[in-house]
Length: 116
Length: 111
Image (cartoon, rainbow over all chains, first blue to last red):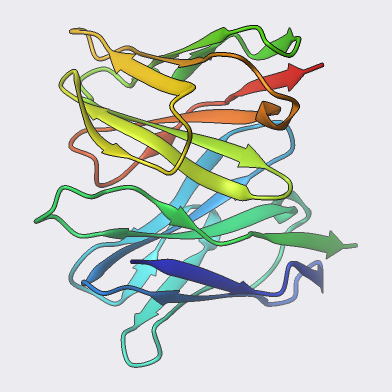
C-alpha cells in the first residue's frame, strides 16, 4: 500500500522568495514519485518525476525536487517565486514496474499563494 | 503532439441518469487511466486500461465502468447517478503506464 502526506494545505510566499512544498510518502516497494500542478479549471500538468538514477530532479518552470529515501521525502523547491506559480500542487507516488501497478496515489494538495 | 483530450468539458445530469465520458490519449500511448477529483476526497484512482484490457481498478462501486478501444481511446460510464458523483473526472494517458499526462477533465454536476 502507498500513501502521500503533503504538509501544509496552504503555503503563502512573497514574489521572489523561496518556495518549499513538502511531501512525504510511504511505499512498500521502490517508488516512482511525481509533482503535478493544477491551475484553476484545468487538469494536472506534470512538473517533474523521479523514477531511478539521480536523486535531484529538475522540472519545468524552475522547479526541482530531491528524493531522500532515508527520510521518505520528495520536497519541491523553487529559488524565486513568480506570480504565475500561484496554483495547487500535488505530490503523487506509484509503484515501480514488476506488478504493472502504475496507479497514482495523490496527496491532498498544497495551495500556493504568491504575494506581490 | 497533441495532448490528451476529454469530451465533453462540462456536463449536467440529474440523479438516476447515466453518463458517458470520453478520452483521447496522446498519439502512441497505450495506457489510459481515470481519476475522480472532489473537494472532500481529493484525487482518487478509478481504473486503468492498457491495450483494451482493464489492468487496475480502484475502490469504486460497479456503477463506474470503462472501456478502451483498439485506437486507445477510452470511455467511462457512470450509471444511476448520485449527487456524490459530482466531480472533475480526469483522464491520463501514458506510453506504458509509468508517466501519466492528464487531460483538462470533464466537470460533471449531478442535480
